[in-house]
Length: 249
Image (cartoon, rainbow, N blue to C red):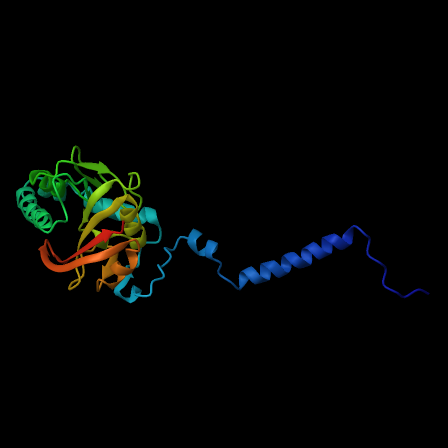
């Protein structure tokens, strides 16, 4: 009697080989976390930075839509918008005008500059720029406030490359993706253009902030196409430090 194992049909062999290889691949995937898995999940991936101990993304934002909605909760708050447009308006325009006049004296801004205010809310910074003679000025915010502020997400600015001579912002702490925030500034700045940030290093920002900054080190790292010009103390509505960068030509 022939006791040998029957040979497998010729068509069955490729199927079994394919099944075996598929099982190996599935076993490998089960024990690893590929990049495409991490970035497509609902969890916001951390930014790999050699100085990220001084730049910490706040937990709690499980996806970008929730982050945007939280920002809108503040921006669309009717009581806050009423305050920004009335009681706070004159005071903030006056203080911002002083900030921008200082930039003009230091040769960082001129009346012929094309200027952008990032996260401008109802437009006090833009009004201040225009008051001191920088007529070609505009602001962006998630909620537009015509004619001073157009709709725009600072993680993906709605402008062409090399559009502005000066970009100002005091909302860096609201950036969920600081590297995108800075990348968009450098993309839309002209060569030789200036970015001025007002940040807080000595105290944590408000509950709507998405990150906490503890030194200027992470900013220097993030501005890959620019050089640091100046760091100085300011009194900017709860923000204590002015950091100035110039985009390389």
